[in-house]
Amino acid sequence: MRKGTQNTIRKAYDRKLQMVVTAKEAAINQGFEPNRYVCVVCEEEVYVAAAYSTERSVHFRHHRGNNNVECEYYLGQLTGNTDRLSFKRESREVGEIYFDNKNRNFCLGLRFSVDEIEDCEKNNVFIELNTEDKNRTLLKIKINRENFAPDTVTLFPLARFSSSYYLSFSSEEETSKRLFFSRSNTPIFFRMMGHDQAGRCKYVRGGVLYTNIKYVVVFPLKKSSLKNQFLLNEFDVEDTFEFKTMDMRFIGMVLSIKYLSKNLVSLLKSWNYKAETSEALTILWPPTYLTDNKCNVNADYIYVYSSFNLIPKGNTNVPRENIRLVTSNVSRINLLPQSIIFKKNAEIIIEKKDSITFNKKHIQSYARKANVFKVPEDGLSYFMFNCYGVSQLTVNQTVYMTPDSLIIGYKHNYPVTYIVQDEHHVKCGNELLNDILAHYKKTENFDESKIDQNRLSTLALQYIKKCEIDGKINTVVRHYIEEGLL
Ligand SMILES: [Zn+2]
Image (cartoon, rainbow, N blue to C red; front, top):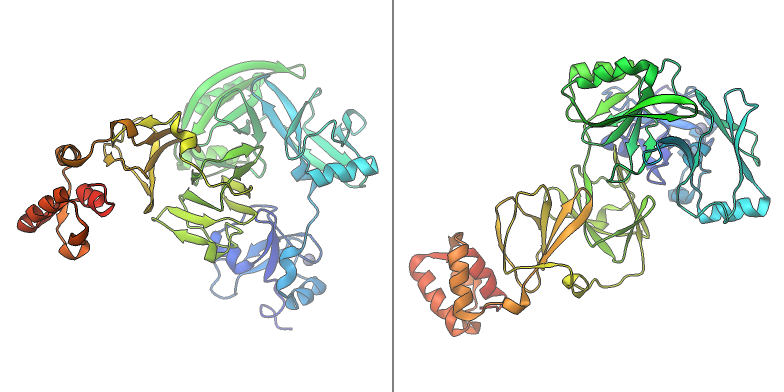
């Protein structure tokens, strides 16, 4: 077999998107995260190779070399059914080290699915955490419904310091090592999971940090000089505190990386971290509710804002025909039972719940009411939803509310303010027309063919006659006339 032609792996299982993807699809998305792709035959980790090569086509490769003929032979015969392959979850996905910023201690966080809990309960499986010397058991706990709620992270405080911990299941022989504190006592980064500072922070595994993401950085008090390293302008330090846990004193800092620079990159490199620019991903509509790491949506579709293009099988498991680009960053997605979008720091898993048509009346009670809305400069991102779809609003933009329009202001990923039309103070007729003309000055060229003059009210007809003479029409008035509101 000639090297570089047949004996390459073209497909692998993507643990993030939970489906089989081709090397080409992975390369387009530049999804080169460690531990993301596994060989569908031997279940060993593979990585994207020759992504930038002009000589060889992109393929997956085993870390130990590409010499497993069986894997390659089998992959040559793959049919379309591989998407249903299921892969055993690694124990690294089950457990992770957390910093609890409320109690200021380190914890082991464990999470299991309903099936896993039931399975373990049946087989009487324990999970065990040991320190480095392996003879000190820190935690031994039965995996059952009493101890764990499905799909929710349960935290167990770590009572003893160790530079690494070993996690094992009583049902399996292999033990997984969780490296934690580095021997050199360099800073350790935890990513803040909630939006408040009192929440749980997850250990950054894989060593990649992103801009504009809040982290808690921790290092031993005896290395307090490290604090000065964070004086770099590239860091935005919000809080610095001291705490004691596991009989040791530590310094903690709440911070984010504002921008990347050569200095910063080399500093982080010396601590074994890499830095990248973050991606943004927000569900705009409909409102969602979070259960642990999943967004639940009571609808068949969502509008999503993303700073990157959605690539089927590259950064989403949603097929192309379900995705419609509304504006350059807003897409409408027809949901699968479970839709996943993942790129760099941005990750959402959306569970489609029983479809309930969202009734605007639900939010009427707490929505602000206005007939004219001027977008304030308050740090929120405002989006308008109406029968035309969704559009992002800019600061100081003036919007005329119609009965079917809704504006939502978002902070981070959460809708925090709703604006609907003030139905009790709806102006109509001449009063409305004058009000629009007074507040909204934007006009456009008048196009007679767009307006059906036979269906116009007397008031609209009068206005249109004026437009015919001027050759201009007020944009908002045109919308109102088209919708039969004037
Ligand atoms: Zn293999």
